[in-house]
Image (cartoon, rainbow, N blue to C red; front, side, top):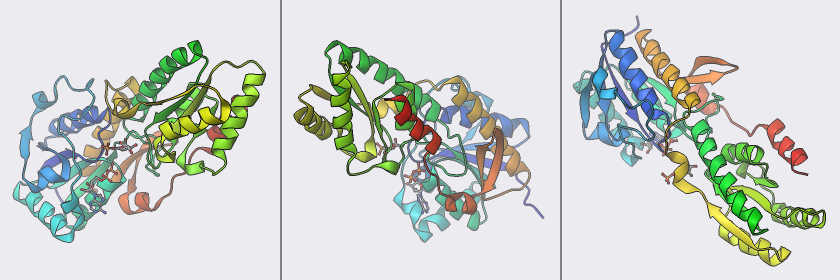
Length: 325
Ligand code: ADP
Ligand code: F6P
């Protein structure tokens, strides 16, 4: 028989993402409207270990749906990766009467959630990462906002790059995933997109050849979008300038991409995912992750979700090459 859930906890873990607050709000409001008690856990698993836990009511989440960051703070916690830490985290949940927990974060955070579930705490993960690098879902909280932020920044760099007839290497976030770079490459009409999933040794020579051939047909400036994980953009810019003779500048957009007011899409999807996570807990489910696939909100077993592999959208990637001729 499914365990009866009376009190739930909510935490954010790993890198923050715009829209996490909308998800927190949804968990709290949906939980309370269903008769549950809701406890906030500050600073992810680190705060759980330190029992930084507090009661939340509907007013705890007022005026946050539009705010970037996470009101619960976030962290990375090595102790949660040890069997002792995982057992202690589950015991602390029990001590505070937490029967179910909603973990908003990425793959790493879901591994922690999986362990809590093994220790008898019902857990539901919500995908929160700007990187879109969670295989079971086509949407992750924050990706839309991060792409829009990066896109607007690249538009601005393009203005000055065009005025000076330069080449600009613009680095977007994505240590292991090139989704932001790919979307910006398309939306900013870049000459070239460099992503970790498809990075090849001869990419840089191809960029140089392309820049030179485009100069010959009258192109006055060039935009290259580089995902963080591919390599150092400043060094790349120096090499490209030396090889082409064209003034080249690097711009690293950085953590600006993780902040700012979430877009409408991030607010709406994060809200829907937060409410669904509460429904799953109410149904007695555990070890599940909320997802958005083929136009529907759904959920997967965390073990299955973590075993899935995500690739870049090949259709979009090959399209960038056709459109940047
Ligand atoms: P993300 O959740 O965005 O992928 P991290 O990989 O940094 O971010 O993971 C966030 C936190 O999740 C880690 O600091 C750790 O506390 C927890 N975590 C990560 N991997 C594991 C694991 N294998 N087992 C238990 N907890 C983990
Ligand atoms: O949130 C994801 C991400 O932005 C990655 O693209 C990046 O590599 C990483 O987080 C950097 O995070 P931090 O600066 O917090 O270590």
